[in-house]
Image 1: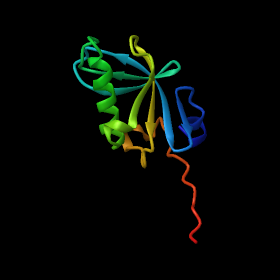
Image 2: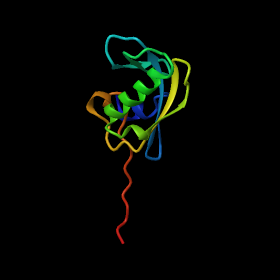
Image 3: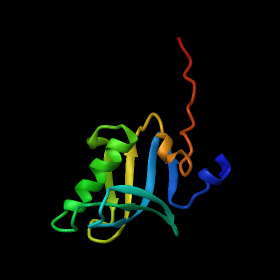
Length: 114
C-alpha cells in the first residue's frame, strides 16, 4: 500500500498533528488487536465487554498504548453507545510499525529558528 493510498483511507485522517480515526469495535474478543480496514472503519477487537463504557475506556487505553501517547490525548468524539466510533488522537509523534501498513506518518513541518 502506498503513502497515497494510506492518506486517502476514509477511516483515517490527519487534522494538523491530530489523527482522526473511524473505528469498528468488536467487544468480548479473545485478544485485543487491530484487525485492519473494515469498510469505512478500522476494525479493532477488544476483550472488554460493552457494559457501562468499559469497552470505550479499554479502546482508548489500547490506542494510547499502541500509538505511544498519554491516555489523556485520546478522545472519543462520537459513538459512545455503538460499535462505530470516531476518535481523536492528539499529537502522535510516530506510527508504530504494526499500523504503518494502514496509516501514513504525519507530515512534519519544519519550524524556523530565530
